[in-house]
Image (cartoon, rainbow, N blue to C red; front, top):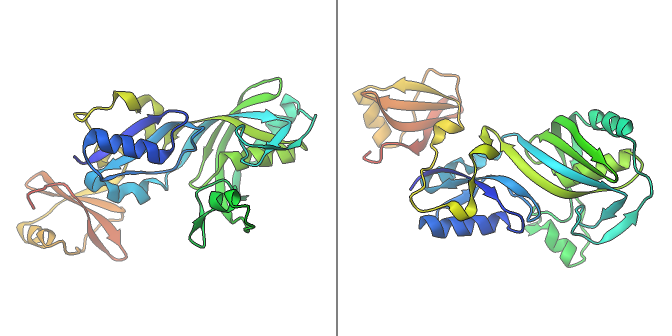
Length: 281
């Protein structure tokens, strides 16, 4: 079984939990996810199955859309509502000020990675430093906030929609929004509604997944050229050798006698084998 499966991750499960459950349901150990979701979070978790695990690192680069709930007035050690409260403030921003601050976050910017995250420093995950109460310098990485919209605001809670680049931590973004508003803020709820071309409308509930489920292929997530190859080129492909192809695309789907045979990926000036389509080769 090979392909892509979009799961609507339920609250309380880690991304690894979902991978393990799907692995058992589909009777394969070759399952990988394309972007961690916190246990508190729900929504789009894209899984690659079988040979498609080669796509994992490619799909993690895609932009993501989230719906997040902010609670103003507190800050916790985990930057979400499940953590221990460290700071409190009576300051609750006005709707006008919040909208202005949200707009100020659009664009490229540095972001500090939260201590409670799976980011590795010197071979150890950051949350392990936190649990062991060890000091560590938190890394800074560049992110891009492409869209940031206020959906609702009532009392101490606001709901926002955010479209962000790879590597963006919504918890950190909410903390920084709070700081710019001269108060504190934590994430109460988070739902990922899109990852690249994958949407929550097409996601499967975890309990509904069975071993006969139809998986999506690479055409649902990759932009590629298509090239009909000759018999001589087919011999090269059979031996998994690189090819010179006249294309500007990152991926090229090779066909022989109008049948899909292999997906190649750009490698400097040439193209190398990436994903086999015709298993008879």
